[in-house]
Length: 484
Image (cartoon, rainbow, N blue to C red; front, side, top):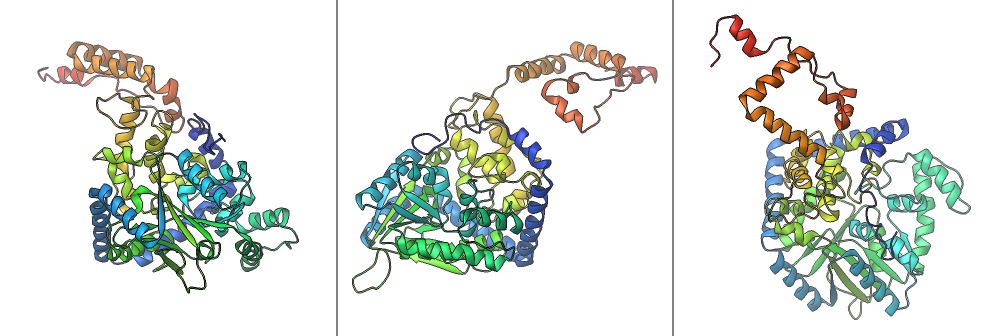
């Protein structure tokens, strides 16, 4: 990690193929994901059993997010105004390094050295835990899945269920190694109780709590957080300081926009009608109230989002409500798991979002890690055309287009590939050249190109196409058909 908690330049830029191959060779990983994904898909399908209702809800969710993005700058200014009127301080960060410094300054100013964290994908973008640890602050994940992977020194493999790649036997062994006086048990309730005993003590001792934000309401200055375990509420209400982290696209215009989005999110993510807890935070503890934080701060992170927003086609990426449904239905993700992507956001939405945030030159493998089957786009609750965006990013990676706002555009251009396309253009752009190539292919009896270079992988699992013994022109002439 770098000094700001971010990965060093070039980290994760290559190697998806190698990591995916390793995951495919691990039967435990494949079994864990297959079992989990099958269950999630079945639960989601049961709650969206009525196609008419699904289409109507989806259209509503997409329209809410589209309306928000159309007025994003204005709504962000209104959110800041309303939050400050409610007693919530708002901080703006262009980069993850700036966001990390904002959080650290808030903690240092209050002498906070122990932090409990609710689930936050923005904090994963910031690599916040590593950053705080490097500066002497203990940061403990309180979401059960996040707590498990933090104990094991891993990163999340799913944006909703971070430890979905582990089964209960693996977690039981981990707790036995890492938690003092933890008796070995494969019972899920006992494992949960073991984690709860540790976390309850940490909630009481924490100097500050950090959380994510599912959406922020510009109309009222309200921060909305949903969860199932109660850890988010403990992280935001028990410590005296609450720091909320939010990507700038998470704003919504009105309070009435929240219920449709939450209904789509919970049904799509976990197959629930509603989560156990819906927290709506509109300010710090008021005089006379017995609980709640004395201070609430909102950190709004850009990290490339404003650049994505500038492109009319790619801006729809920012509609995402982080439900993970696209991952659960992706034939690539469900077989290789989240760690193969080496990214904060894996799966289909990660293949669109990560290259735009980190640069298509560095992460050009990800848009190609897709069969373009369209399953992700079909289940997206806010109608993000993921497959179309993947095709666009593939082109951006290899083409230096004038006026492109995509980070690293054209940086993955291959000289060999460019030469191949020039030769293809030459052969198919001249009748004489085309006939010569066709004649050579029929006489050789095979096409040598698919057996060379990067196309060797394609022919390793497919039969290479073989040209016919006679060209169409030759067959036509034999039948007396004029060669026009």
